[in-house]
Length: 136
Image 1: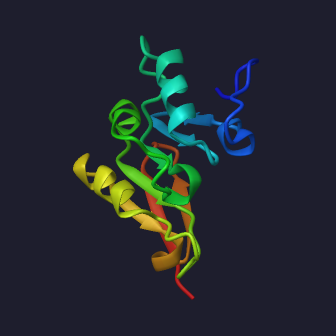
Image 2: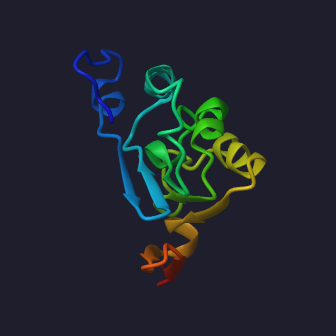
């Protein structure tokens, strides 16, 4: 889904990271790489007339940093579950409180690797989701 032919010049590695969507029966997951607000806004513009971004599960962009997961993007994706890959006590302060509040505002269940350990999602044949946490 992203990046498009013309790449974003600002913070190129993050904002042009791959955004992909997995669909399986009634399950969907959006993988957002390390995109930031500028990329989220361009993606919103690209898919403004579509519900293609809607996903049950969202791999939260850029470890939940304050430069990602703007409310408009989350409102369009409408995730029920958010996964945040982040190290415990990391120097960047990820995930940001702003991102966590944005996710809570849409009643999204949040799983974080710093609190929950590794996270596995199992999608059954009927599309039912099971979450496994591997706390160390």
